[in-house]
Image (cartoon, rainbow, N blue to C red; front, side, top):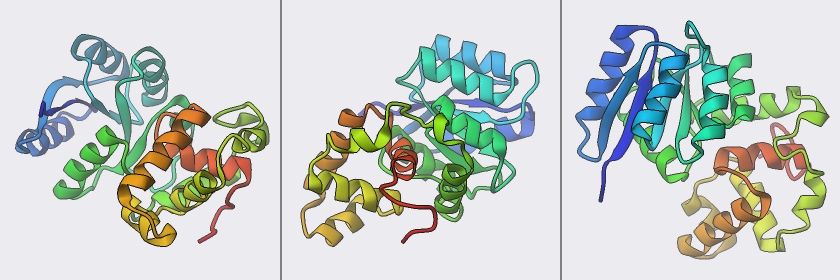
Length: 226
């Protein structure tokens, strides 16, 4: 299997070097490029077409939000992880709408960094487990109703899902893993993966993170539920 290709973008050289060393030490991850500002990040993605872009929120020349917006629009095959020093950051909220797939705090442990890259590359889970559920809940509650990720009458779109797919979406939005959803629904993990894939395809969503936001906005769950 080909390694997960990663570009690291941060204006602090020590951060870039540290994350690069940690990731390059993994047998299944390869750092293919670095960037010191948002414009360089977009160019590095254009040149290397990585699977994952680690992108600092606050950078010179072009900030992380604009870089995320451009990368997600031009290179949708690249998943974006926003790096932040704050548990809750308005820029991160906006970056999620721009298409970012997850969040990591800069003080992340090395094992969690590699795990997060793997999870986003596979679209399998939310990131920063200690803060993500609260982060998403606050994010969804704070955005105006007209700013929905899929601004196409979310509640109506829910009708496209089968009853079991809707239940899968609700459990996914509570932060459950595929294994936990399988246990809750008393089905196999393979069946859950099929349901999740169907949910993403029918709702035209990039990944599980955006499925969570959609679930909040459509009223399938409410912030703090579960």
